[in-house]
Length: 182
Image (cartoon, rainbow, N blue to C red; front, side, top):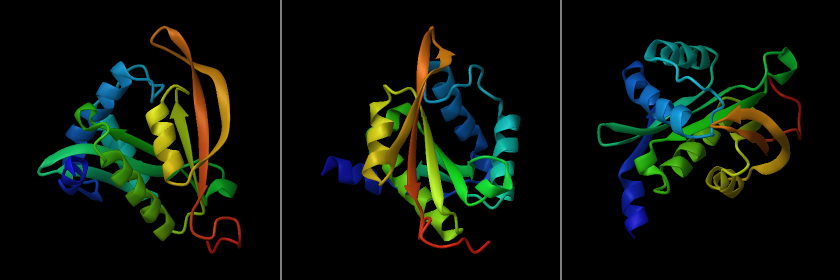
């Protein structure tokens, strides 16, 4: 019951420019204290705004989760790779404020991101999860239909240790059952 009440307090919407300070703060914490991102130095708000604009201007979804007026997480689906053959595949990124971990905001964000990417006609979504020890992220993706596609061992060095990247993948819409329309 308490978890349902917490989920009810969260709504998902498109990220707006006014959300960038909160998005940057959430990401800053993840960069400095975690292993989900392999960045070492957190980007400033101007860089986070530039990144958001690149995602949105490319027709990709960029969402925030908010509780009241407070942004508690964000997620986006950006281009998987720049070459044209990859244009129907996106890569997901999702970050939640540490006080909101385990409270349903991540599941709501990822579910909404999957729907938004599918609505835009994308056919595959790939998650590149930093650190094979990130069990919560791996479990969340698996619960929403992602399957394990591989593990790249010891490809990142952060916080004094080698880190893996876990690749997970999920079809969107008809996936590869038919030719893309675009």
